[in-house]
Length: 227
Image (spheres, rainbow, N blue to C red):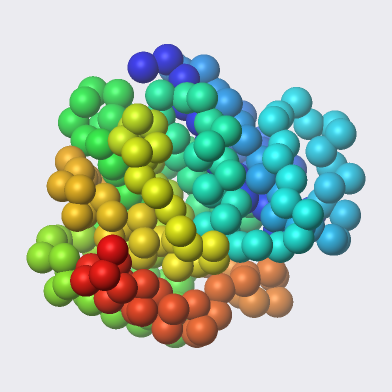
Protein backbone atom coordinates (compact mmCIF):
# COMPACT_ATOMS: atom_id res chain seq x y z
CA UNK A 1 0.00 0.00 0.00
CA UNK A 2 1.40 3.34 -1.09
CA UNK A 3 -1.20 6.06 -0.61
CA UNK A 4 -3.72 7.14 2.03
CA UNK A 5 -6.72 9.31 1.16
CA UNK A 6 -7.90 11.55 4.00
CA UNK A 7 -11.48 12.71 3.46
CA UNK A 8 -12.55 15.88 5.26
CA UNK A 9 -16.22 16.94 5.00
CA UNK A 10 -16.33 20.69 5.61
CA UNK A 11 -19.30 22.87 6.52
CA UNK A 12 -18.64 26.31 7.98
CA UNK A 13 -15.30 25.49 9.62
CA UNK A 14 -13.28 28.64 8.83
CA UNK A 15 -12.01 28.86 12.41
CA UNK A 16 -10.71 25.29 12.78
CA UNK A 17 -9.83 24.05 9.29
CA UNK A 18 -6.30 25.54 9.05
CA UNK A 19 -5.32 24.05 12.42
CA UNK A 20 -6.54 20.54 11.65
CA UNK A 21 -4.80 20.59 8.26
CA UNK A 22 -1.52 21.55 9.96
CA UNK A 23 -1.96 18.64 12.37
CA UNK A 24 -2.57 16.22 9.51
CA UNK A 25 0.51 17.43 7.66
CA UNK A 26 2.64 16.87 10.76
CA UNK A 27 1.84 13.14 10.88
CA UNK A 28 4.14 10.80 8.96
CA UNK A 29 2.54 7.52 7.88
CA UNK A 30 5.29 6.40 5.54
CA UNK A 31 2.62 6.73 2.85
CA UNK A 32 1.79 9.33 0.23
CA UNK A 33 -1.06 11.54 1.50
CA UNK A 34 -4.02 12.58 -0.57
CA UNK A 35 -6.07 15.16 1.35
CA UNK A 36 -9.54 15.72 -0.09
CA UNK A 37 -11.76 18.51 1.21
CA UNK A 38 -15.46 18.21 0.45
CA UNK A 39 -17.09 21.58 1.03
CA UNK A 40 -20.72 20.92 1.82
CA UNK A 41 -22.16 24.33 1.06
CA UNK A 42 -20.16 26.50 3.48
CA UNK A 43 -21.34 30.12 3.80
CA UNK A 44 -19.11 31.48 6.61
CA UNK A 45 -16.05 32.32 4.52
CA UNK A 46 -14.49 28.86 4.66
CA UNK A 47 -14.41 28.75 0.86
CA UNK A 48 -12.12 31.76 0.80
CA UNK A 49 -9.39 29.58 2.34
CA UNK A 50 -9.21 27.04 -0.46
CA UNK A 51 -7.29 29.16 -2.94
CA UNK A 52 -4.31 29.07 -0.58
CA UNK A 53 -4.40 25.31 0.02
CA UNK A 54 -2.59 22.68 -2.10
CA UNK A 55 -5.35 20.09 -1.77
CA UNK A 56 -8.12 18.66 -3.87
CA UNK A 57 -11.37 20.49 -3.07
CA UNK A 58 -14.80 19.23 -4.11
CA UNK A 59 -17.90 21.39 -3.80
CA UNK A 60 -21.57 20.89 -3.01
CA UNK A 61 -23.69 23.86 -4.06
CA UNK A 62 -25.87 23.44 -0.98
CA UNK A 63 -25.53 21.75 2.38
CA UNK A 64 -26.41 18.08 1.91
CA UNK A 65 -24.90 16.49 5.02
CA UNK A 66 -21.87 14.49 6.13
CA UNK A 67 -22.98 11.27 4.44
CA UNK A 68 -23.43 13.01 1.09
CA UNK A 69 -20.04 14.69 1.43
CA UNK A 70 -18.32 11.39 2.18
CA UNK A 71 -20.07 9.69 -0.72
CA UNK A 72 -18.52 12.35 -2.98
CA UNK A 73 -15.17 11.85 -1.28
CA UNK A 74 -15.15 8.06 -1.60
CA UNK A 75 -15.80 8.38 -5.32
CA UNK A 76 -12.88 10.78 -5.77
CA UNK A 77 -10.33 9.03 -3.51
CA UNK A 78 -7.43 7.29 -5.23
CA UNK A 79 -5.59 5.97 -2.17
CA UNK A 80 -5.18 2.35 -1.07
CA UNK A 81 -6.47 3.33 2.39
CA UNK A 82 -9.24 5.82 3.14
CA UNK A 83 -9.70 7.54 6.48
CA UNK A 84 -12.31 10.06 7.63
CA UNK A 85 -11.38 13.27 9.41
CA UNK A 86 -13.75 15.95 10.74
CA UNK A 87 -12.81 19.56 10.03
CA UNK A 88 -12.71 20.57 13.71
CA UNK A 89 -10.30 19.79 16.56
CA UNK A 90 -12.20 17.07 18.44
CA UNK A 91 -9.93 14.34 17.05
CA UNK A 92 -6.14 14.21 16.90
CA UNK A 93 -4.55 13.04 13.62
CA UNK A 94 -1.62 11.63 15.61
CA UNK A 95 -4.05 8.81 16.43
CA UNK A 96 -4.21 7.73 12.77
CA UNK A 97 -1.11 5.59 13.01
CA UNK A 98 -2.47 2.48 14.78
CA UNK A 99 -5.57 2.50 12.55
CA UNK A 100 -3.48 2.67 9.41
CA UNK A 101 -1.02 0.07 10.71
CA UNK A 102 -3.78 -2.54 11.04
CA UNK A 103 -4.68 -2.14 7.38
CA UNK A 104 -1.16 -1.86 6.02
CA UNK A 105 -0.24 -5.12 7.76
CA UNK A 106 -3.39 -6.78 6.36
CA UNK A 107 -4.78 -7.38 9.86
CA UNK A 108 -8.12 -5.69 9.10
CA UNK A 109 -10.35 -4.36 6.34
CA UNK A 110 -11.89 -1.70 8.59
CA UNK A 111 -10.53 -0.08 11.77
CA UNK A 112 -12.47 2.26 14.06
CA UNK A 113 -10.81 4.66 16.47
CA UNK A 114 -12.71 4.19 19.72
CA UNK A 115 -13.12 7.15 22.04
CA UNK A 116 -14.94 4.99 24.57
CA UNK A 117 -12.18 2.38 24.77
CA UNK A 118 -9.91 4.95 26.45
CA UNK A 119 -11.26 5.81 29.91
CA UNK A 120 -9.18 9.00 29.94
CA UNK A 121 -11.74 10.45 27.51
CA UNK A 122 -14.73 10.04 29.83
CA UNK A 123 -14.40 13.57 31.18
CA UNK A 124 -14.09 15.03 27.68
CA UNK A 125 -17.61 14.14 26.55
CA UNK A 126 -20.73 16.21 27.06
CA UNK A 127 -22.97 14.11 29.30
CA UNK A 128 -25.85 13.71 26.86
CA UNK A 129 -23.46 12.96 24.04
CA UNK A 130 -21.70 10.33 26.15
CA UNK A 131 -24.99 8.62 27.03
CA UNK A 132 -26.16 8.75 23.42
CA UNK A 133 -22.93 7.16 22.17
CA UNK A 134 -23.13 4.36 24.71
CA UNK A 135 -26.79 3.71 23.86
CA UNK A 136 -26.27 3.67 20.09
CA UNK A 137 -23.25 1.39 20.43
CA UNK A 138 -25.21 -1.02 22.65
CA UNK A 139 -28.08 -1.12 20.13
CA UNK A 140 -25.57 -1.89 17.38
CA UNK A 141 -24.09 -4.75 19.38
CA UNK A 142 -27.56 -6.12 20.14
CA UNK A 143 -28.81 -5.95 16.55
CA UNK A 144 -25.68 -7.16 14.80
CA UNK A 145 -24.34 -9.68 17.29
CA UNK A 146 -20.90 -8.17 17.45
CA UNK A 147 -18.70 -6.45 20.00
CA UNK A 148 -17.67 -2.88 19.45
CA UNK A 149 -17.26 0.07 21.77
CA UNK A 150 -17.84 3.20 19.66
CA UNK A 151 -20.11 3.07 16.64
CA UNK A 152 -20.44 6.85 16.19
CA UNK A 153 -16.73 7.64 16.08
CA UNK A 154 -15.48 9.84 13.26
CA UNK A 155 -12.19 7.97 12.88
CA UNK A 156 -12.96 5.13 10.52
CA UNK A 157 -10.22 3.72 8.30
CA UNK A 158 -10.97 1.43 5.38
CA UNK A 159 -9.16 -0.63 2.82
CA UNK A 160 -10.20 1.33 -0.25
CA UNK A 161 -11.26 -1.62 -2.40
CA UNK A 162 -13.46 -2.84 0.45
CA UNK A 163 -15.33 0.41 1.15
CA UNK A 164 -15.78 1.31 -2.51
CA UNK A 165 -17.73 -1.89 -2.97
CA UNK A 166 -20.40 -0.64 -0.53
CA UNK A 167 -23.21 1.69 -1.62
CA UNK A 168 -23.88 4.52 0.83
CA UNK A 169 -27.38 6.01 0.78
CA UNK A 170 -27.44 8.22 3.89
CA UNK A 171 -26.91 11.95 3.41
CA UNK A 172 -26.49 13.16 6.98
CA UNK A 173 -25.09 11.80 10.25
CA UNK A 174 -26.95 8.52 9.71
CA UNK A 175 -23.92 7.67 7.58
CA UNK A 176 -22.28 6.30 10.74
CA UNK A 177 -24.87 3.59 11.52
CA UNK A 178 -25.34 2.78 7.85
CA UNK A 179 -21.67 2.16 7.13
CA UNK A 180 -21.28 0.22 10.38
CA UNK A 181 -24.28 -1.96 9.57
CA UNK A 182 -23.04 -2.71 6.08
CA UNK A 183 -19.47 -3.56 6.99
CA UNK A 184 -20.69 -5.86 9.77
CA UNK A 185 -23.17 -7.58 7.46
CA UNK A 186 -20.38 -8.00 4.93
CA UNK A 187 -18.27 -9.81 7.56
CA UNK A 188 -15.42 -7.33 7.36
CA UNK A 189 -12.26 -8.01 9.30
CA UNK A 190 -13.08 -5.33 11.85
CA UNK A 191 -10.93 -3.93 14.64
CA UNK A 192 -10.95 -1.01 17.08
CA UNK A 193 -8.07 0.92 18.63
CA UNK A 194 -8.31 3.53 21.42
CA UNK A 195 -8.03 7.19 20.44
CA UNK A 196 -8.13 10.53 22.24
CA UNK A 197 -11.10 12.90 22.10
CA UNK A 198 -11.86 16.49 23.06
CA UNK A 199 -15.53 17.33 22.49
CA UNK A 200 -16.60 20.77 21.40
CA UNK A 201 -19.89 22.38 22.43
CA UNK A 202 -22.74 23.59 20.23
CA UNK A 203 -21.66 27.24 20.55
CA UNK A 204 -18.25 26.19 19.21
CA UNK A 205 -19.87 24.79 16.08
CA UNK A 206 -20.89 21.24 16.99
CA UNK A 207 -23.64 20.28 14.57
CA UNK A 208 -25.01 16.90 15.66
CA UNK A 209 -28.23 17.01 17.75
CA UNK A 210 -30.64 14.63 19.50
CA UNK A 211 -32.60 14.36 16.24
CA UNK A 212 -29.58 12.72 14.64
CA UNK A 213 -29.58 10.18 17.48
CA UNK A 214 -33.17 9.22 16.70
CA UNK A 215 -32.29 8.96 13.02
CA UNK A 216 -29.31 6.75 13.91
CA UNK A 217 -31.55 4.27 15.76
CA UNK A 218 -33.86 4.10 12.76
CA UNK A 219 -30.91 3.55 10.42
CA UNK A 220 -29.58 0.69 12.55
CA UNK A 221 -32.97 -1.00 12.42
CA UNK A 222 -33.53 -0.31 8.73
CA UNK A 223 -30.17 -1.61 7.54
CA UNK A 224 -30.38 -4.64 9.80
CA UNK A 225 -33.69 -5.90 8.45
CA UNK A 226 -34.52 -4.13 5.17
CA UNK A 227 -31.32 -3.55 3.22
